Length: 588
Image (cartoon, rainbow, N blue to C red; front, top):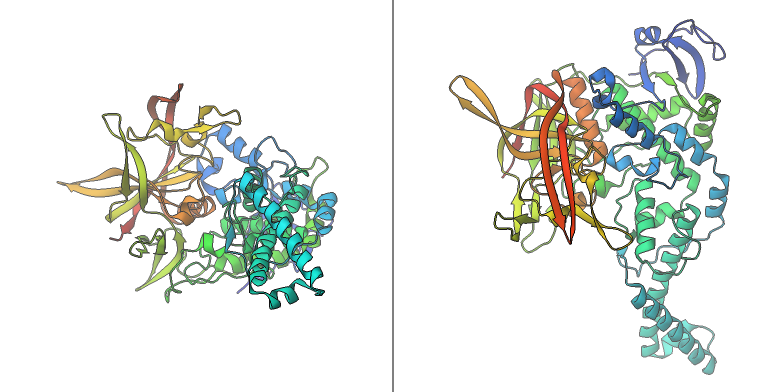
């Protein structure tokens, strides 16, 4: 049921005499500007589309005081897509930092980039190719391409010598030629697909125009990873049919979908919803667009749950997009052109009539969590059923499954022994009963003594090694991402209840590929945007005490290959306490 709109307090070209004003949109039209209080009285949902928006746990109103981190978050979200000094705003959505609509408006006005893409003619994805094309050694690839060119020349000479009209006729007359032609076409199909993608990467400005060579080397792989992140795809640096489809689609449509994803996160925050369809394995298309790669955001191997809730975020976002008139790229462009100010900023909140939340929603919801380890087939290198995090709410006598997200439960990792020797061990999260008691926003990672120094260094373009300081946080690239929840084990001691920290967390990650590949150091990793949704949901629907920065004193010197670097951390992060904690059961 949608809320009924109020009578307009001011027309679309005039604004009411109040400080907090919002734009009331319906059916693609700005009906009126109204005061915030009037919109709330009419049960309209206020959605902040401005470029100073922050997630729940990072807002000063929520008690988060770290102005430096907030400004860095906003700089990243507002970064111009043409700024190559660091990652662009549109590349960080999977990590939990969605671009602002202001930065997207710049992409929507890049007509030269659109024209570049549209000049290209893509080959269809051939059935004879494997499921994905991986990075290859350039020397071996050049030899393969040269051999393919030589083989084509030989086959065409045979065809002409026999007076045949096509290579297919030659293949029909000679079994050897048939085998050679099949191999040649498979190789050429691979080369063509790579060339097509490289041409699109050049249009995006991610690759030099001298690198259309049909070889997926390290430069093309790095550029592909950026392109995949920008388009909300698994940044595997491998070409699969899904990536090929994105590259072959209209570039304006791709940018429009970025805008719809931004709207979806703002709507989820404004409504307090978390149900995304993952519990039922079905997502609501937003204005007919499917926005998520299912293999990345849903755990593999689960049937739709009977108690699973539908995609309420998707439904509300679809209604919001239609109310705003964002039913195509031009509709989004018109909206932004109307509200971007003369200095290029965007400070707009809209009042929308959105579906009502279910009856089981309240200020303090009865929640519980189950972490399913999944199922690994004997001798298999990956799970037949992926580990998953399941969030339930008690609705009377019924437990309703809100979300079911892919996670991790451990894996083979290097471990530093007290003797200085590094060994390979399987590190797994313990099973049993825990609670989520503590949330840290903008967390710092304090590497335990068992972390080998070499794991914290990375190479540079000059072949040297340097300490990867972003791993420590706060950063979207850190080991914990932008947010983490501590798994405490409750222990009764007399009349007291103690909380033991065994070092296990549910958290974001700067290593997105660790989720589909299913490994961690025993913690339960989540995609950055999912853990930000989760923490925002908990802060809105559980009783919370805000404690502020938790101060620590951590210092360690790391050494590797003649390099040494000192790290001193004085904070663990900004701490919130859930009262009471949320029960968490990790299955055996």
